[in-house]
Length: 255
Image 1 (cartoon, rainbow, N blue to C red):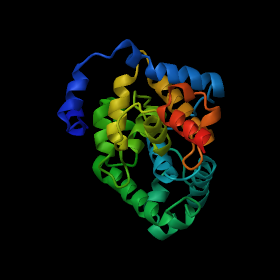
Image 2 (cartoon, rainbow, N blue to C red):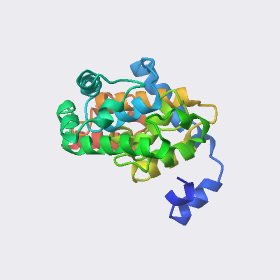
Image 3 (cartoon, rainbow, N blue to C red):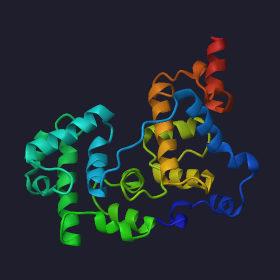
Image 4 (cartoon, one colour):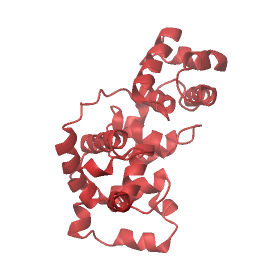
């Protein structure tokens, strides 16, 4: 998706043309250093082929990571499927798929989306694979993926960054969105617009693996301290640079 499609506010477009100040340029690296010091190095990711990553990303939305990994094993066992052989899932009925993925959130929505997506890939390419995407530019890959049901910027970002495609992108899920907004890194917006704005702050030296590491640290922080309902601002390693946390801590002291 082109930048001009995401930034409808002329003020936002003007900001894109201005070089970052030294303070702006160090925002994400500073956050990264603080989180790395607090949580340590994230475990290296096992890189899957893009189709397997797409299936995982579609099913893992609003679902805890251990459950998401379990449902992939359930799919493989139920249909004798797996990497390089997802045709049995594509050819199963929606009801069969829904039963196999019953432990995820909203299986009644994800089952028809998954089947339609797998059938759509086959219809458009001629076989069930996404390996051919490696020869395209990252923006073209994401546009192609986002034509399928349930595939938005978060999912396309995960596919291009977390799979063997290993492209520069940020997967802005609900966790990443929450932390970025509480830190006031970017104005409140949807995931696609937030990614565009955050990518402007990403150092040019950060490759795909570094962006993956950054996302993993942000996600871990959101799940551990910067939680949705009861954020633990008082012990947060980002408190000194978090306006939201400072406000909440000050409010607690007054009560």
